Image 1 (cartoon, rainbow, N blue to C red):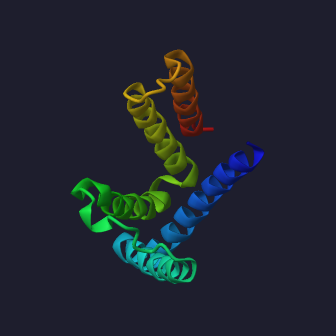
Image 2 (cartoon, rainbow, N blue to C red):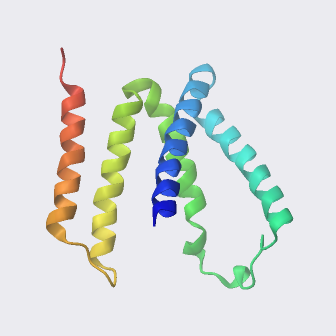
Length: 140
């Protein structure tokens, strides 16, 4: 369990770091260009890993429904919006809004899953995140 927690935490660190780098890149170019290079480099790295490790094209991939591939376009929007938002509202505000959006949508999706969450705990988590957002907006 500790390994999974550490992996999830590092995933969050990498998301934050990636968004910060793309945000800086978008200042010298545009969010679209920052997103483009993010995805091109990611595509190259994933292709190399897929070729080295195998399983790049799993059996049945061609038979998958169209919505199985919607994650790619959603990822493009996610990366481009982060590149645009970070220079404008800051890394903390962007992260808090992204996390709160993830929490709200995660709670909604979990309500329809086989293991629905404890609604009170999920609501409290969302409220704490939104409270953090309010605190960061307070002026000195």
